[in-house]
Image (cartoon, rainbow, N blue to C red; front, side, top):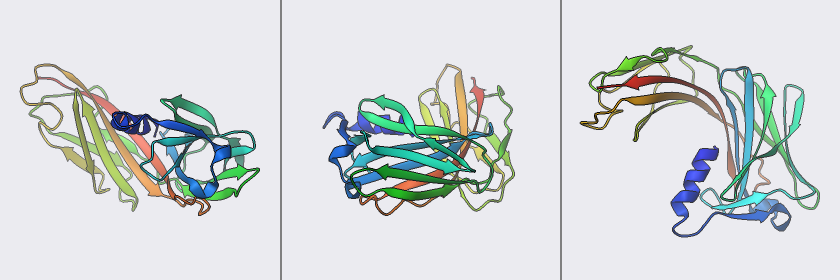
Length: 234
């Protein structure tokens, strides 16, 4: 979440810098909640939250002040979300939980002393999986397609694939069949002489529910994320 928010701020910097306001000055009804839980296959899941004023595309971020708290509960654990980042006024809160099983439930609460609380944003993790090919460190030529396989497959949640090599970004929504082939030449610009490290990332996502007290709306997305690094060389 953090890199995309920083990219958003860079995109609008020619018009206006990202701004930060204190939560004590904003009603819950005037906030948009961008919430996430992400598992990477290490037995843990990271819960993240950013609050904004003015909707999904706003560049005004909310910093919590005394009396306001973000907290999450999962599997009997409760953690208060601490500030994870404050870059270019993009304020991100987060906490790490044990467990990354399919259907593990998370409830995130925004507790307020002087305004309406939003106690019941919820999400459940999709099924974990393993990338079975390509092998980490494998080398491909620009003329070679790259077959990506994963297991288990056949789930109903949204699946997407992204690959980054040199200055090239490739992204596709894919069917959860257990295999997808990145087309030949998709990762290396025509005539590029250099070798490129390639990071291939698969995201299996499931949409959750945002407490309606957030009057500007929001999203709560639970994700299983896996990646493998390979090489493309002429």
